[in-house]
Length: 147
Image: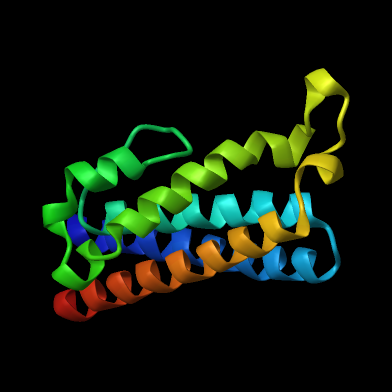
C-alpha cells in the first residue's frame, strides 16, 4: 500500500517536472535564457526527487539531492546507476545557476540576462530533458513491476 502511495507522489512530481521542461524549452526558444535555466533546474530537482520517492527514500528538503542519490544508488537498476554521475553533475551545476538565473549578479549589479547565456540555457534544457527521460523510464519500470 505504501509503495503505491509513493509511486503516486513520484508520478505527480514527474508531471510537474515535465511541465517545467516544456516551459523551459519554450523560454529557451523565446530567448528568455535565465528562465529556461531556472525551469530546467526545477525539472531536474523534481525528477530526481520522483525517483527517490519511487524507491522509498526520504530526502532532505533541499534543491540538490545528488548526495542522497549516490548514497542509495544500490536501490536502482544497473542502467540507471550508470547515469548517476551525469544526474548528480546536472543537479549540482543547475543548483549553482539557480540563484544567478533569478537574481543575476546582485553584488555587481548585473541582471540575470547578463550572467546567463544562450549556451547556459541550451546546456540546462538538454540536461533537464535527459534527466527527465531517465527518471520517467525508471518510475514507469517500477510501476510495471508493482502492477
